[in-house]
Every structure is written in structure tokens, then in C-alpha cells.
Image (tube, rainbow, N blue to C red; front, side, top):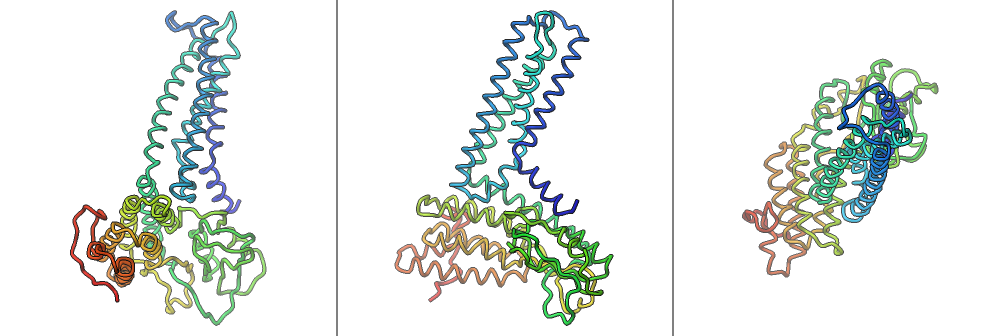
Length: 435
């Protein structure tokens, strides 16, 4: 099985809401069957024994209660889907339905239902599964406690700031881990290869249209070393490619029309939607979507946008503190064997995080003030080579404020940096309006 197919299977299993509950149901059936055999071989004190009618009533109640709770969990899930799609971002759902707590509570409820039903069907006048009935009651209590934890968890996650924090955590974890691991690879280069004199000896094209979800970087590097070729990716992770588009070109060695292109193509996973595993810009996209939706005239909630900017700033600090050019492809590597991997630049990340919020929040004083505070803080904290891009964003912010508040008595206030938007520590005006 190819790496791309294994990746898609893992993505499906992580996003599926039925696999773990099904496993819980199967486990409940097996545990119930085993408990029936155990009940026949153990003797319990009178305090833990039941009459057949009592056991039947109790197990029937447990089956009904778990079925009702399962339906309620599904109802809550549907409501969260509707609210998240309308209030946050439709892209956020890709992360939300992977939540382990949701799947765990469904698996526990379905497992308890199946376990209790297996016992219920064997209750007779001359045989009562006493131990199993007690365990079924205990499982119901545990299910109720886990359900309360689930409800508390998702009520708190309905806050936009919680969404921004969750999504930002993916970037801080995955981006740093990927950069640290790939920094140790001597044959991996960032950038693009242009105008090579020799034609590509192997060209791998996409068999279907889709977004590039992930790439087997280790596999591509191993293939390049084994075949002593330079492997060049032509698209970044997250790009949507049409069917037949060039995904990979390999240089060096004789031209071939064999199965090598299939091996290379199998190391790139395509799907209907981007993922956050290897694509930090997708996580930033989700956070920006939450902010600009809060800034829409229908919602008009600039405070939410300010809170999202807080978490965007933390993500940008992480990205801005990493040297993205330390393995940059240059002409000196012309005859190198390895992998050339295109990535987004610091300017790309900054533009994605700032542009739309600045545009949609142009009329909000607190968004303008918070945005200025963010950019000034980043200017002092990111690597020196990243600072010119921040200077350009500050110039654009000056122009936006000057154009929006030119005839307003609040022009002076809109040009002040404030880490809380309005109400925090107001700084001094460091730049004048752009004429």
C-alpha cells in the first residue's frame, strides 16, 4: 500500500465519527458474552444479587438511558456543527470532528448499550447475570460522568477565542516539530528550481484533482539518494492541483517512462480539503476566517477579532523566529542530489494573517490599535531579515487608518498601538498618516 493511501486512511479514521463507536459496540458485545460465562462460574454475596425481574428492569433502563444519551450527544454535535459553520469557519470543522472526547463518549455509550443488551437477552428465571448487571450499572454512571465532561468541554469550545487557541496550538506544535526534524536533513532544500538546462528524466503528474494534503518528505529524500537524482516538487502543500498537473520532476540519470513516476506520485497525498498536519497556513486561514466573520456587518464583534489577533500574534512569533533560509536552494546546489521543497515565506504568512483583518476591520478603532500593537511587538521579536515585511505592513496600516479616519475626530486614537484594542496600555504614535 502506498504512503499516500495510508495517509488518506489515517485521515479518514481520525475524522470518522463511526469507527470508534463501532469498536465500542463490538467490544461491548464481546465483554457481555464473556461476562455471561463468568457469571456462571462465580458466586456473589446476597447484597450483590438480583431477582430476574429486578435485573430485567435495571438492564432495560440502562439500555434506554444509553440510547437516549447517545441521541443527545448526536444532537449536541449537530448543533455545534451548525454554530461553528455559521459563527466560526467551515474549515474549523475539519479539526472539530477529530476530537477524541466526542468519539470516546460515543464509544462508551454504544459499548454500554451493547453490553447491557447482551446481558438482558439472557436473563431467565433460573439464571441472572448478577456481576454483569452491577457492572452495567457502573458503566452507566461512568457514561454520565464522561457525558458531563463532554458537555462542559464543548460548551467552552463554542467561544471563538477557544477556537483560535486550539487552532494556534496545531501550528506551534506541528510547525516547530517539522522544522526541527527537517533541519537535520542535509539533502532537503527550500525554494524553487528554475531554468535547468537538462530536461527532467522523470515527471510525476497528478492522477486526480485535489489539494495537496501532505508529502512523504522522508520517502522522497530516500528515493533521491537511492536513485542519485534531484527531486523537485512543483507545488506547495495546500495548493489545489488539477488532474494531470506536474507534481514532481526528477533530474539526473536517463529519461524513463517506467514506474518511477508512480512511485513518486504515491508519496503525495491529494484530498478534497487541506489539512493542518503539514500546512500551518491552513490553520492561520481558519483563525483569520473567525476574525473576519466577527467583523462582518451581520455580527459586528470587533472584540472577538482582537482576541483572535492575540493568538495569531503568538503563531507569527513562532514562525518569525525560525530561519526559513538556512537550507535555501541556490545555484551552488546545481548538481546536488536531494529534494527541493517549496514553502511559504515569512511574507506569505504575515500577509495571510494581517491583510484581510486589516481590510475588514478598517472601521474599527480597536482592531486598528491591536493590529498596530501586534506589528510593533513582532518587529522587535522576529528575526532581523523578517522586519522589512513588518515595516511594509505598518505602512499599509497607516494608509488604511488615514483613509478611514481622515475626517474623524478619533484619527489620533486609531493611530495608537494598544495590546487590548481599547482599554489597555496605549502607546505613542510612532508613524504619521500616509498622505
